[in-house]
Amino acid sequence: MKILIIEDEPSIAEVVAAYARREGYETSWAPDGETAMGLWEKDGADLVVLDLMLPKLNGEEVCRRIRAQSQVPIIMLTARGSESDVVAGLDEGANDYVSKPFSPRVLMARIRAQLRPVREDHPKVKGGGAPLLCAGGRIEVDAERVELRKDGTPIPVTKSEFLIFSTLASRPIRTWSREEIIRSALGDDYEGFDRTVDTYIKNLRKKLAEQGHENGWIRTVYGFGYRLDDTEAQT
Ligand code: CA
Image 1 (cartoon, rainbow, N blue to C red):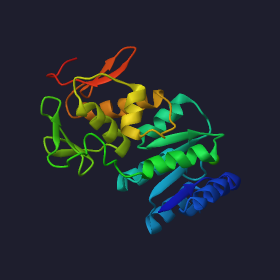
Image 2: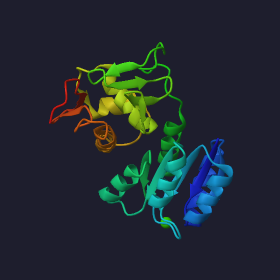
Image 3: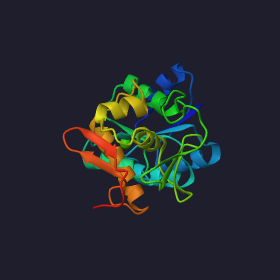
Image 4: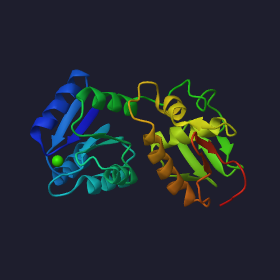
């Protein structure tokens, strides 16, 4: 497994690389966005750690370009720490983010979470077989291919977004708290915080809304969490 580290601050890149190598990953390093795209196109990677503030090509642009070609997991490093940067990063297709200054151990836990295969004991995966139909039969949840489809057309969701949607779809009437969603979809050792779920849901809604439902078939249950809206289109 190879991790591409895109970070203009050599001391940070070195720390990330040292931790990654200690866990058995190969690493490559790009100090700016252009070098990063060159390395990505030449060698690829199994996961990308991407700083947001970069010379030549900024992190958002690098994320957009990689995402146009691949569903590789991308973890953003955000120095500015503001919520809008985080949202912008996730909107560009990043799978997760870590705010600087960060603990290398937390970053490694996030990396492991992204690289962990879809869990065999996940409610949707169990038994494999036919895709689950939800949202009144409009959305297909295909655990085998890790794919959401509307009328047979794949919806471009990330793996984390898929896992969250399939968790909601596994018991459509049930309301899930943010904590339950994290635990069931992303795993016990995911070290994100509750509100991360809101950002994933926001992205899911945006992608699903393009398929014809304003809220993306996800209903907010105020003060508690989310559940799938399995009824006909509504406002
Ligand atoms: Ca930087």
